[in-house]
Length: 394
Image 1 (cartoon, rainbow, N blue to C red):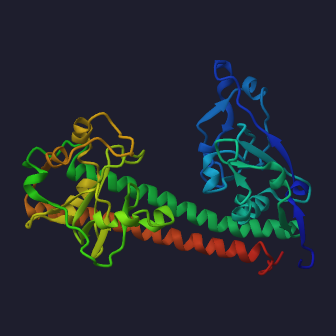
Image 2: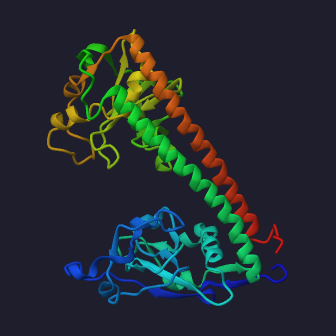
Image 3: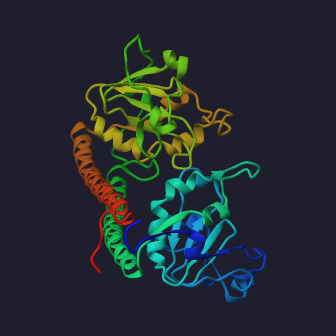
């Protein structure tokens, strides 16, 4: 280790405390001023509001930990993907899926949180599900995790530097949220809300303005893609860590640039499925998708925004028969899907709306890129600072 630095087990840096859930049937326990943290609240390193809170009476039945406590999730399916770590800026209570780490003398709690996040991938190797039905992080193994510990002034300086990056990222994320709200408002203003389109626009069945695409591969070497409700077209290997198609890829549909696909998979983000337009020369997509190409004389960008806004959801909700099948797909026939009525405003109006919404969407893309750059810079800083490769002046 570097001069003045030590490698110390986590159990020597903090005391561990367990949480619990007060009686849900006791109304006098709930709705008070003391935050009660669950995994749903652990979305960022700094706690930003909670879903539920306790009265003093309710808090007395569990453990209250002081400001500066670091919370770590130790049970939950989310542990197979991430290790939520939260730094509390005030006293909180927490449930039984979480451990609270109260920093000992000579340890800066903010530095401790950053150090834990830096070791996230190593800690997650200890997660298992054997006999528990959910992800579980062994507390003894967590306690034995070694963390680098520089002198206290250096800990504080490192935490201050990393906090600066966090604050910059948070500002950009707040701006992005505002831009997202603006895009949503613009979309509702220009296209309509909840499937209620401007009355001046004629409505036509999708089948009258689009042709179904059912072409198969024919031996070409094309990427195998899937549709994510949040992200649109993704490489199947990126989403599932491997191609899921196997021999069935021969039955996949060959989609070409500018054509659309409807994924009738049910999800929280898109309970009635989602429609996206392909933005690359060609791709193979699952044969269960309903694929189509718009006829000439229509602005593809306009319809891309229309479908992204969930404009078909109201109609689909009435057409879907008996919800979700065993394979996770919605019970919807291709005939019913193509019977959905679509607005067909004049082409110049389509194009004007598409340009406006695309410009607003591009602002979000630029912010996403900026956030990603700062996030990568922060990861690099953490690697350099938390190993002592870069020393700080104190």
